[in-house]
Image 1 (cartoon, rainbow, N blue to C red):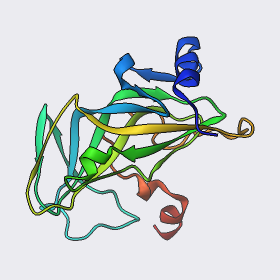
Image 2: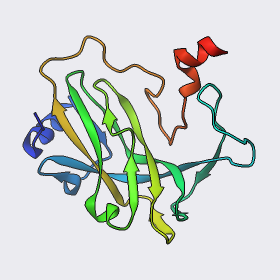
Image 3: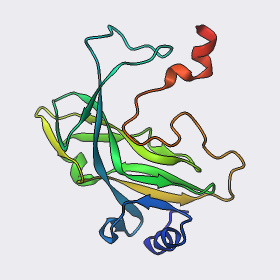
Length: 181
């Protein structure tokens, strides 16, 4: 069941759900708008010739209030908001329609597991033929929350728990990578 604005406000007030910082204007009828942070990662194309699933990816780290994404380019970003989900709530990350209409695809694998805590790393792709200038603190996407039929006995406690900035891939930590090493 998708959670309504009234349910979200009640959960935020009780501390059951954390989205911080948050203004009333970010709460929509069935979602919460989240804003772009000022921390970005770009794959360092000069220090690696191929990306592998069993090796660490090297990134260039950028901290600034504005960034330009060139056409057909990929960039990791973060949300300004830090979230904490209870063990019976999951969230979907959805791009805002107004952002998608200029050719910016926003993803984070589309899903936030119950029990997750941290900022959300966003995967941004400019599908347009023109560069796109982004500014920190602008609403970039929305979180749609759904209540599960019961709390999970195995809430998320994975390799991205507690992240505070854009966080690069940690796929090399997966068990499949460890077996092939």
